[in-house]
View 1: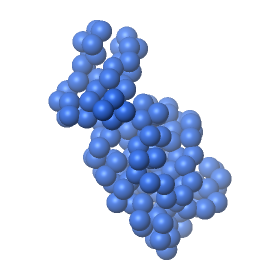
View 2 (view 1 turned 90 degrees about the horizontal axis):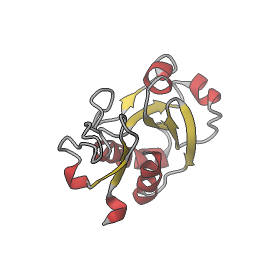
View 3 (view 1 turned 90 degrees about the vertical axis):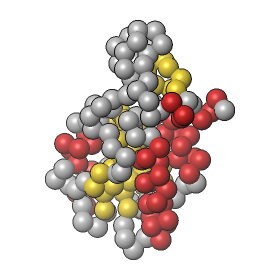
View 4 (view 1 turned 180 degrees about the vertical axis):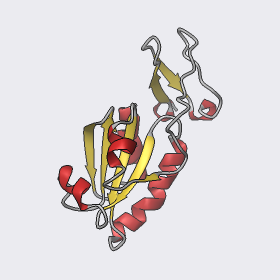
Length: 150
């Protein structure tokens, strides 16, 4: 299906490349200039745990797309969303960096981004917030918003 493809912009020539999920694990290259597309550093298959102290270096100074989940252990919707967030981190590894931040232990970052309820997923690109998703959205809605980040 076309909607399941990843659209990735080439860092060298800027061309948009459509990559099917079946080819994501093999080093994709740009169809125009043959530059490797999958970034090597900074992307992991699991969300990175961040804190007030590490948020700037892990998220804001990261050059590329980042999805940050603000959550709390007492929140039932958050606990339901965490496994979905982990799945998405694995599916989008190499394209989007995923991070989690616990709201109760890191109030300064939550205040900085005006997070008033949980769960909240912030989508950032090059350190700037481009979208904010409030609540425990279904996986397909999260995927749709993550693909628009690419």
